[in-house]
Length: 447
Image 1: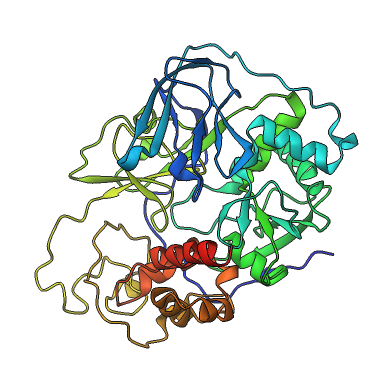
Image 2: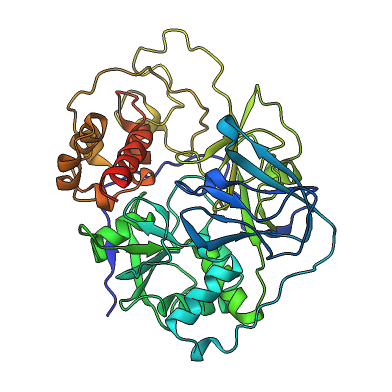
């Protein structure tokens, strides 16, 4: 039986620059890249060397700590470069496409007749496994685990983020097949969170939950917390909505189709170009936006609260459906420390008159303040809909106190759940980074 979710705490940031819901083909990128740092805590071991010719869906490296998990090429072409960083860490594996659709074909049989272990083996072999993320710790799922339930959120609440419901509505057959495949991996349920006006009214092999409320209601972590909280030793898996359709496509066609829908948003993107683009996983940023002046514009893979800063020739994050362009905050506001002087800046603390004027706001990258001591104001609790004490948990992570972190609910959270705290807290601390470091400590000490 489904259970609707109503979230009251949180904050909807109304920002200018949303993408028009029109799907168009993006220009074909000249080069693609799979970036191992997109998969947190994963260490790659290369299978192929530079110069190797690959088919779409052919493995190019695997995980050192889980050798069954393979990462495949999104296109057919030539592996032209392995970009390394400090201590020879692999940062990017670049592939130049050859313009053909030569793809590795798997014998998948009939999805309805497959058993759970057969589905798991096919996901591992095909390169679809890296789409599955584990809670706790928000890392790639282990192939040895069985989750108590699986969650998929099709409700998008993050500001200027690509609408998952619109993206999935373009590929419902594949989405349904992906849900059926995932349902064979757990003895529990597959939970799908949708918005009030979602195009998804019914699904086989899943429970649909209507979700209502401000951001972060669309975060899968909030939905897990409300429906099936995680206790010590338990595992829950999550999959992004479009990635479910990619998994479904594999079981329908037997090939890894690395199609990715990317919404171009933000005030620095030309209004006529703010649309949804059909491209491929690992596409280069400039294939969609061209070249921008990085002194004036920041390119973000993802939304404005959780995304990664990129340059013109870098590549979209493996999991992201959004590319955001906003102004760099290089200007200095005269007497900017005075309240009520910058009324174009949305303020949850009421330090500007922005709320009185209403309408959507144009934001830049200015922090509007510097890091200072933590003060108990209650502002973190106002935007945290989960039953955790955010400030106490942040302090426990900063102190590395594992026992307190466990007691305060570290197993249930991920950095994205603290994104609004990054925005609203007057201490200007990096809450997402602190939580990520706390989770990494838990992986090392508890496992």
